[in-house]
Length: 492
Figure 1 (cartoon, rainbow, N blue to C red):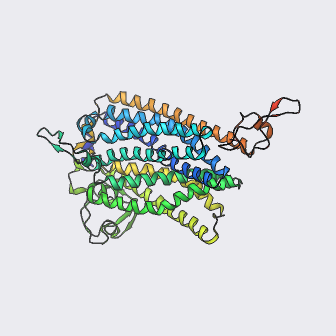
Figure 2 (figure 1 turned 180 degrees about the horizontal axis):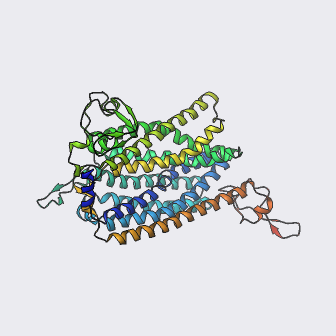
Figure 3 (figure 1 turned 30 degrees about the vertical axis):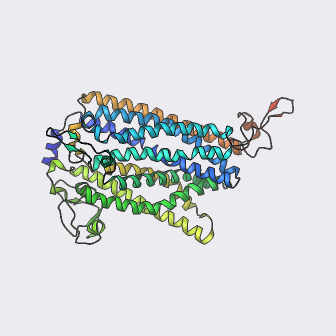
């Protein structure tokens, strides 16, 4: 307890508000990332199905998803830009000293962001103005640009976890930078694929969840069935894959960042035959309160045998490891992520069993209730993944090279608290606007599909299909133009 108090007393006063500000903006921005990384691929998958099978329902879904994708991207521009500024404003010590080593990752992400903006504009423009297959192929680079953006961000973050590709001179400054090594660090592969698959799973379950709610409310038409089936299938296929990738990533942490692994598993002393604790709280004296203890399992998971030696937190000085509170936070985040992932595997198996036995989706309302919650559960796992990565690395901002307290700005703590309050207000307004736009779009689409003729008359005329001509207004009984053509199978 005394060591923890001493560490907190030595921290500069601006460290806490700087951390809180960065944590809030990152936690907010990452809620949008699954849509930016994975929704283009899911949209193009539905688009391809619509063109190949001449399916107007699939094309309608693809077009509507592309509109959501564009709105999300606009909001992501705001939150992503704030994060970019914060890196330099809040952590000038890190960027000033190490920017030349790992800054290329941020450069790659910036170029990918710009390219994605252009491609989204072209894709939206092409719905009424390009030939169908030409339009589709112009959209194919969109998922690649999204993956390139993820490449840049994960390259920078993995370098912070396992820094390499440089040599320190007599003053401790990095020189002789090897860009290839700085990008492809030991943690890059495990972290990148774990992140990307998580984004695809989250986007798939979130999109499918919207149509699962529709199914629960009695909308059993083909539009809702197809809108649910395709993204849920993508997510269900990736769920067991992600479980194996996550296990491999955790083992990479065990080998490359043993102190972080000790925090994730709240291992106090280096030993063999180490038990696994599901949840529980690490105390300052090394004891663990609560939780489910499974003998020897941690050693088995780390090295496939009970005799595997697991490094404990006390193998390094207290100043070089997470505090008991930080270790508990990382541990709970990791366990929540694993628990939700395990439950999603059961959901995916339920879905696969139904398709194998009946060649159809499950009909149980409980299945669709679980499916409706799966997207939100995935967002929780995404947040927990970043908490595990960042909190488990403490007190280092650059692992074993620079502490967070050495990188923080000199700005007064009061100013940072004020900035945090302003950012919270702005983000509430931004996300409120995002939600309002999405709900407005949903209402418009529902009126177009299910509303009365009078309600549809109030809408601007739309195309009968994404590639068809606009409907021609028909005369009303009084001879005035009004309404969309009865020939339309459903506007947008």
